[in-house]
Length: 263
Image 1 (cartoon, rainbow, N blue to C red):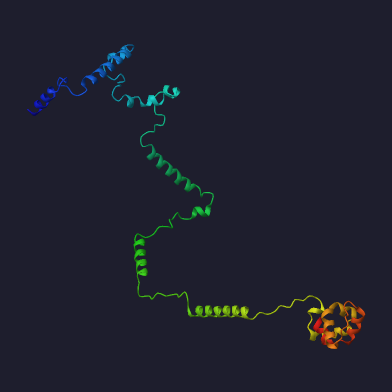
Image 2 (tube, rainbow, N blue to C red; image 1 turned 60 degrees about the horizontal axis):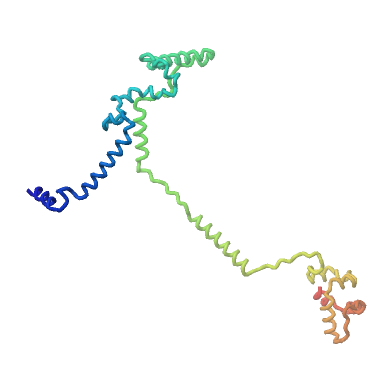
C-alpha cells in the first residue's frame, strides 16, 4: 500500500504523468544515440548480425593444445620436423650405466699397479677403517675430559706486580726528563771557527795572544768598545776613531784581560 501511495503522489504532480524527473530528456538522448549507432554500422553487416555476441570465440583448450605449434611459428624448419624425442634413453639406463662405470673403475685400479711390482704386492687394506664403537667411545672420553671440574684452572694475570713497577719507573723517568728540560736549559756553544768562540782561560793558557800581530788583533777586537774603555781609563778627550796608528800604540798599553773582554 505504501508503494502505491508513493506512485499516486507522483501522478498528482502536474505535467509528469507519473514518470521520474528528466525521463523525457534522457529518452530523447538515448534515441538520438541509437539512431547514430545504426547509421554508423550500416556498412558492417557481419557485426550487426552478431547481435551483441562475441565474434572471437575459440574452442575449449585451444591454446593449450596448440602451444607447441604457436612456439615454433617463427622457426619453420623446427616446425616441419617430425615430433619425435631425440634424447630418449632406454629404461634403467642410468642405473645400469652407474654399475658399468663402477666396474670399469675397479678394473682400472687393479691394473694400474701392474707396472709397479712392489706396490702391487701390498695388500689392498683400508687403513681408515675404525671400530664400530670408536666414535661413541671418543665422545665419552672427550666429555669426561672437558667436564672434569677437579683440576684447578690456571689464571694468567695480564698485569702483574712487575709490570706495574716497570710502568711506574717509566712514568717517573719521563716526568723527570720533562721537568729537567723545562727548568734546566743547557746553552749550546756553536763552534764558529774563530777566536771569538774560544774561552778566555783557554786563550791565556795557549798563549795565542802573544803570537798574534796587531792586524789580527785589530780584526778580532771591537775597536769602538776598546777605545771607549781606554779613554775612560786614561780620562783623555782625544778622539781616535779610524786612526790606526793611535790604535796600534794604544794596543801596546792594553792588558790581556781588556783584550779578552772585547774579543
